[in-house]
Amino acid sequence: MIVGVYTVTRDDFRNVRRSYIVLGVLGVFAGIVGLVFVSEMNIYADAYRTLFDVSALIAFALPLFVAPLTYLSIAGDVSNGSIKYVLGLPNSRLEYVIGKYISRAAVAVAAVVLGTLVGFVVAVTTFSNGADPIRFLEFAGASTAYALAISGIFVGISAMTASRSRAMTAVFGVYFVLVLFWAGFLPFLSLQTMIDTVASTLGVTVSEPTRELIAGLSPVNAYFQATSEVYTGVYDQYEVLSITESGSDRLVRQTWFNFLVMVGWATVVPSVGYLKFRNSELG
Image (spheres, rainbow, N blue to C red):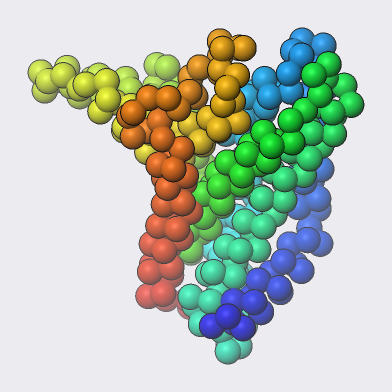
């Protein structure tokens, strides 16, 4: 199995790295992160405050960069017929799905790592208080987990669909639900407003811990909370950092739980996608 996964990953990565889309994702994303640090170097003395703003960029914009790399990873091969050649080789469907996931997730992780590295270099050379490498490493770790979760979700969706249009529609629909809707990016159209509506209709009350737990199951909210380690000991320096403070005993405030949520999204959705793909008719 290892040989099969390696073969699929190697061949797919070779194809992906030749794409201008990949170069664009890496270059543009890293450039935007660098611009965020440059634009705030005279506003904040501490680079970790800018990391908070970059976390918002990663949470809401990274999925849009990752989508073009992932939504056709499997559906594209199925729709153009090349899947017959790939699976005609001694590769199982499981090896194929895992290999596709690894190659596409590697690009997403590379974008996060490169962006963090660019930000660190800018911070060290321009911020009055420099940059703490440990905080940047912790930030890169949480962001990597989020990149893996988003990549896993999108590749899993690609495995469930058989056409390019359906894959694209499904990926952007899921982005809206899991990121914008669940995280409350649009206050008038969010999970919390839906909970309020349902609770009001049923005449019940939803406690705050329950609301927080439901919200915390989103990959984007789990990511925001997972970055809490970055700001350990400096929450009082900037008021906005308090929203990620992990001092509470509540489950959703625990860093391990938030990493577990992202790992769950990174593994469960691709697994469901594989189960659908395993029994699908490839034409």
